[in-house]
Image (tube, rainbow, N blue to C red; front, side, top):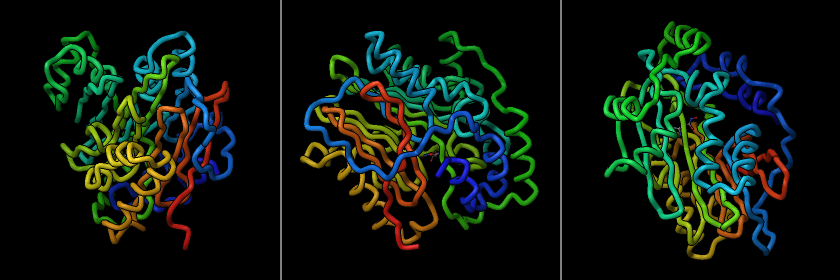
Length: 337
Ligand code: SD4
């Protein structure tokens, strides 16, 4: 099933009731590549690198990252430039410019990046900057800190040469205005639509990096920060082992430190697929209301073997590996409907 269908099937919560129409309208048919059958871990026995894996159906982003890797650049460059493609795409209403705003109409973005040395940089609740991932990289490389928030993050970005701009597009403003009619926050959540872009890459040297970028939960409370930019939750990389990244209900990912958990499970010998499944099961076990939200993980180990798993059907992800840019449907937990 295509992302459009996933969106149509989604019963959006009180946090984003009217988003369905907006997201359906914005879904770009040209980007819909074939979603293959549910895939378990790609187990090849021998390293399949370089490679790129990203949450959701983002062939333009994985293609960009792949090209960067083919040019002999680092995995860090690849994931930054890869997710920038989605940040710049105004039709993607969950990331960067065009992201859906918080309940007061502010587009606030979270992003983080992690390199092969285990260094990390992040920005949360940053406004007016189209490429938070690049600001996150600058935090990592140019400051003594790892995480800048809100105005401080924006100020740093401007001082670093980023140009502030309005990120609220007409389409997102319209969706927000429609949502405001009811402004329901009551969490009657079913499966929210999540389009956070988490990307992991392994370069020709076998080194791993990752990036994660989002506008977070639409119509969230002002100041709300999700999992995406928080180390260990939305993203974690250990160059000796592998990496993992998350999409979905950030509060649930945070409570189980999902990406760190997956990397640690791989360290203990689990495959990326087994590790993603166990991390999802951890969420399910801790949250009696797991039927009301989605969490999806992707992971890769040092050999380039991949895994993906989610709670509810229709989370998909994209890999660029073996010269092939491919979308896959992830296997899922809640099969008893
Ligand atoms: C968050 N994990 O802020 C993100 C939401 C998401 O597309 O995946 N949005 O909780």
